[in-house]
Length: 539
Image (cartoon, rainbow, N blue to C red; front, side, top):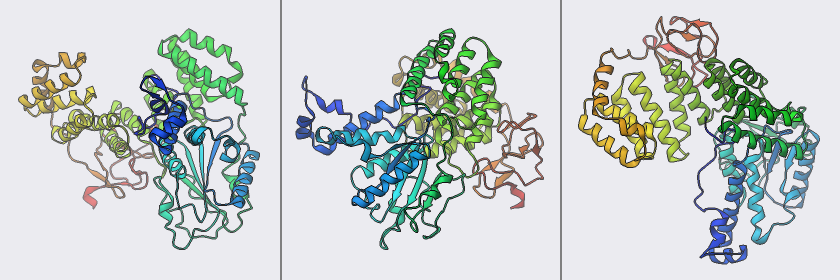
């Protein structure tokens, strides 16, 4: 496992840089006013936002005791601000912590840098609530930044809720109001309904208050927190405990982890305490107890996305892949968004369990949603895809362009180079294999794996792969998304989740033993979770 296990992945270094980049100049520290005169006000304020985002995501993110809500709205007039203030008070009465600029931006700081630092709180919130009004589509500074951050936070499990306060103007384009995915149908149901809540499995929930904007009770179904409540000081103590635990886990000091937990028994009811307990037990050799502790947190169904992924990784390390896979599949309820990181993790586990075509589906999904991530992330996803085609499905021809794209995206991903060299060797293109190996060694001169990889290891790959007959083409195809599956007698499909697998008594995707024969057509496609894998011969 990596360090930062309790932290959310976020975007890379911003183009505008960080605030300290502008304040440190020519060997001396500039004041904010001097930096503004030299670089411009907007650039400095945006840099302050970037610094605050970086600092927030560098620390552990809690599940929320209670969850925190960030309200985004357009400053139009005093009446609109008063309405939003009453909305914030209502949500607090429902048990939530609310971030509202009217409460926090009393002092804007020099040149308004505090505005950016406040907006950065979006990445630390659990719910992003947009108040849509007639003028909301006229996005201006800070509203645009809020939308950008919310879109990124959405990929890390943040809940998104849209509250329609007023019907937009006639010439307004509803789609232009949003910058996040899956929001184009916000107004599809028309206006005037007191409450329009989409299927709870959808990613974005919309509530229409336009007929009675002063009646907030339609929000009660979405905002009703009755869980653990910690003071802000106790939450800070929990964050500090997680930061200490992170170092102890990296040092593999299991006894130190358990001692740390003994000092913080007052936090034992939190998911994060159970998370650290599972790691402590694993490090002290208590494998079964560690798995039970991890499963106990996951079964509650309230863990944050980051905690759930971390515990699933731990379960995989402990050899409980099916428990981990079932927990990850719960994250993806039918119809819901699945973030690229979780999709890739599901693909890894399915690959380990021998469900190669199902793994391929998840890797492809992960790559599609990682296109806007860093070059290294995209290169890793491409390498995963290439590996499955090359090694699992014995298809080096399909693997080759994926692996070439991977090393072009980022030349520091070691596995991408190894897979590319192997693909050339499997195809019998020895000169290209040697050329790629030389390029890889120049890109990663300290790589031990690349140093020992040579012609004597590459040559047998050709014969190893071609010694077996390639897998036959897909026998079934999803009637909704077109995903192909190989479903034979020894490769049945799970009746619950639809994942095909080979030679295993239970489905690796959900852990259930009930399976389908090829003649059945009631399985749900594991790619889109809507269609069924129908035999190609029937189409």
